[in-house]
Length: 417
Image 1 (cartoon, rainbow, N blue to C red):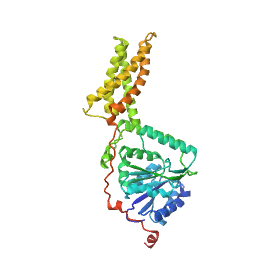
Image 2: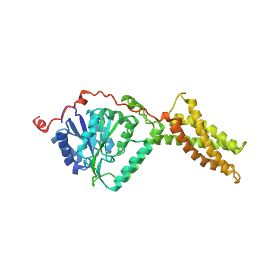
Image 3: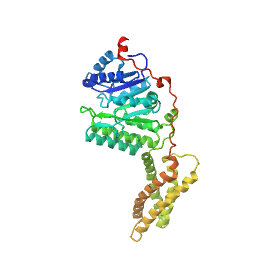
Image 4: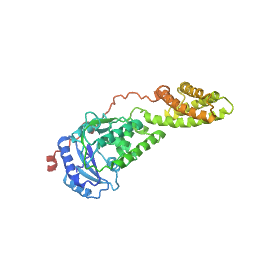
């Protein structure tokens, strides 16, 4: 193994892959020597194998140049990647599945934008039109459905979270890893979502990919864990627990808008509180006032509180700038809701209704009014809070090693050494 730090660390996480490891690593090492003009090291990350994988990896590390074994006793692909990436001294860290399902010809397009400074993270994608993929219908549907869910709930803009072919600038990886909690298959998704929330640039490379019929991935448990991971991240983003501002500031990236899915969740939580408050206020006011008066009083009171809570919690607007304007616009949105609920009350007149029946009808009307109110708040009242200035081309000043990495030695030179 070379004493100097490589430009690229290619990590191959393995768990009980003794039957395929030697063939895959030899193929990968040969490709790197012949086709990649940078010093590359292959790191086999064995996370808890029990079938002799470690012994095969030790033999490969002893007989092949720039092949290293790192043993991670506990299982989990995310844990293995995090362990190796956090210790790496390379400029770029990458990983690929041991079955080499992704064509190796995509490796240089994957790392090139990272070495040039154009991007911070790069992923292989099987879901672009120019990708060529061979796999079953079931896996295709699950993959597309999963990535669609990420776009709706977490506002993800990358196309393929799960392709086992990714690369990250090492300084970026080390900045993001402390925020990553998952140690299994959801690791990839979590890392990518965090990168986007920090305003980092993600490059996508269409790949040729052939499904491995001997894949060890347990689909049912993976789907369950991924859904839990999405819910966990949504909760973290909703409550503000996942604060990526330090990372954004460190790399000088522009502000990032809160995903619409998270805005909807926050708005919904405020709406639940407002609806309960509205019902209680209406019932109290109804004891001394006609239904229309009680409705107007309850709506005005909750509308003011709703705008204030959405301003701070949903759209994270602080200070007094545009405060009066926001409340005036919020009252206009309230007027639309009042028109819906007033119409609902008018429809119940003469039907022998009771106050509880009125509350039920008004609750349904308030659901419709809530939808209208969200659209008005999101696209009109707090529109500037959801807009982000257009990202300018970054003036990246690369170090000499990034601009002109040291080419890896040829096979003959290594033999001579």
